[in-house]
Amino acid sequence: MIAKLKNQIVEVWEVSKTGARPDWVVEAFKREHFVWHDNRLRIRMAFVQPHASSNLVSGLTGGAGGYVAGFGEVVMADDGDFIDRTNGKIVSPKAFAKKYNPIDE
Image 1 (tube, rainbow, N blue to C red):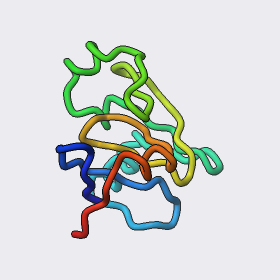
Image 2 (cartoon, helix red, strand yellow):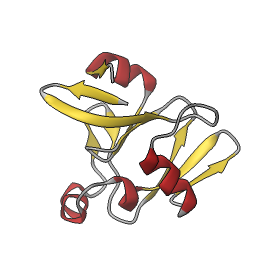
Image 3 (tube, one colour):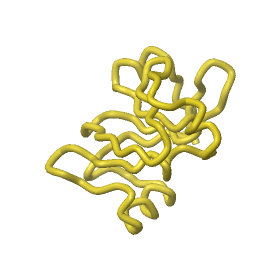
């Protein structure tokens, strides 16, 4: 899904066992960067975050409305959360509804 965050166009995926999966999500599952543990998704953030240098700078600080993990960090997302691939963070449904505007594709 494409969405707008402030003035930035971002690529996001709503975490779901049954919903549509873009190619990058399919690839993440094939490479075991995404693995289901019951209704939680284990994510290797190095796959999601676009630039390793930004991973080192961001460290373990929280992002605006989402959790930003450090390089090599493994985090969990719940069914219904959103992965902001562009900014490399996990966003709750509440924060997504408040800060993101989905764009019809």
